[in-house]
Image (cartoon, rainbow, N blue to C red; front, side, top):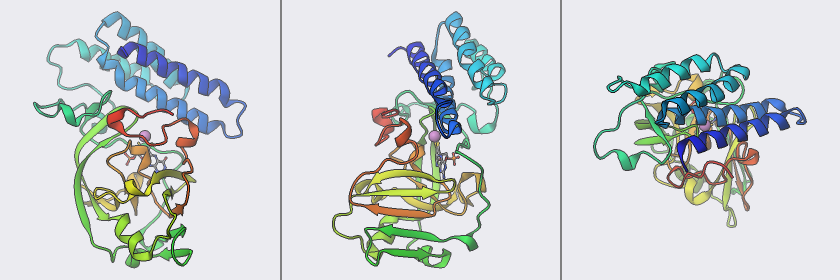
Length: 293
Ligand SMILES: Nc1nc2c(c(=O)[nH]1)N[C@H]1C(S)=C(S)[C@@H](COP(=O)(O)O)O[C@H]1N2
Ligand SMILES: [Mo]
């Protein structure tokens, strides 16, 4: 699909979500989903080569983001679009270091999932407020199809499993990718196999603050590169990135990586999580562009 067509499709999707929002019991959710679509569209704008067309799309996307209160995005997007025309622009002017574009080096093309652009930092994205949770408060509940029905692990019990550090790339459905980010924590597999998963368990819902959740099949949750992480790039997780504990699932769009994890529910069937129930793809493989259901 041509990039401008993709941008228009995302805008249409956002408009539909906003139109439906007033009939919903929780309009904030629809607003957040619309904003997510619009941010995806915003991320694609630099790829629109025709200047006039790009300027038109900047206004289309930016106005809507402005209306949603996503802080003066029209002005920002206009800068980005202008920079796209400068032959040797040093990256793209963007609101924060987190979204500074990082040019691809030779050989890095296959690392970038389709439709994504590379950034240097780690943008912060979530529904609701950042909760104030410390390691001392950690109570990780494992429930559902697990031997003993329910386990509540505190920090000491959780962190007693082997510590693992992985370096990986992260792909967010809003079209940014971050390369070579390191995470330290434990493998959910080590924890779950030790507690004893009941036969018949096939999926999990991983819950975090603000009633957020993401669903995964157990084979994915058991992958070597999946962590319940407490550190990122060698530093303890910051509150906005999910402290004290977050899930990291590099092989899926980043919405699957629940922050502020407090519960893992093992299930004998697949139950959609927060975004999966709101139109996102059930699996979310970035290399297959499984963005929306
Ligand atoms: N609890 C919780 N976890 C969450 C989310 C959320 O809204 N709540 N958002 C997800 C989405 S959509 C993304 S892109 C990543 C963002 O993680 P970051 O803010 O550390 O970059 O967190 C994921 N985990
Ligand atoms: Mo996301």
